[in-house]
Length: 218
Image (tube, rainbow, N blue to C red; front, side, top):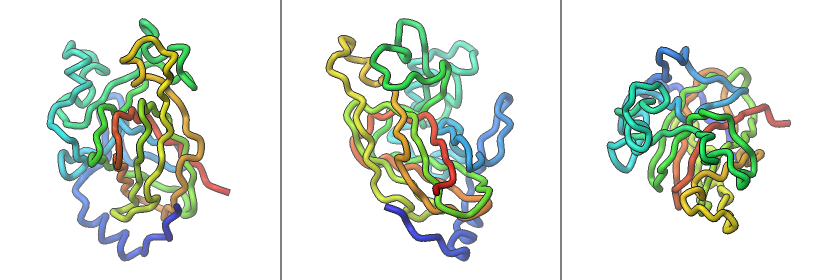
């Protein structure tokens, strides 16, 4: 499903009242993520619960949880925020197993422990108005659906995420780590300039979402 272009007045009104800001830290330069280009899910906006994201609980189950508070950048990445974040690990064939459909980069940050009803915002800077398609690097042990808003308006409708479950894997917990790229998973109309994308988890959850690669659609 492809939504029609968002009226300029609606876009301007949403951006005027939005209180979130682009992510930045000592390693990441910050500023709006750019389209065309790669949009990192873990670099969702600052602003906190109800502004930049909604999460089912306030605990970060990845950073500072599964990944212990040891002073390292990756283990403690945004650990005081509710969005659950982890990163790909290549020891013990966690994220580089034979059951990957595509092998991700090591130390790739991702949003995980997703539940239906959760969402997060990402401020982007779009070079040219038009229709863009996107690939998604993800895992999903039972499928599900997501959607994308542009400046507060639904731009895609429900998007089906194919399951990456593989019954041949003898390690049960690794069903959360079978990586895949969904090519052209969505098409979306984007205005030029600054916009806020909202990624919603609609059904099933239990997905790991790493990044969206946007390119101009022909």
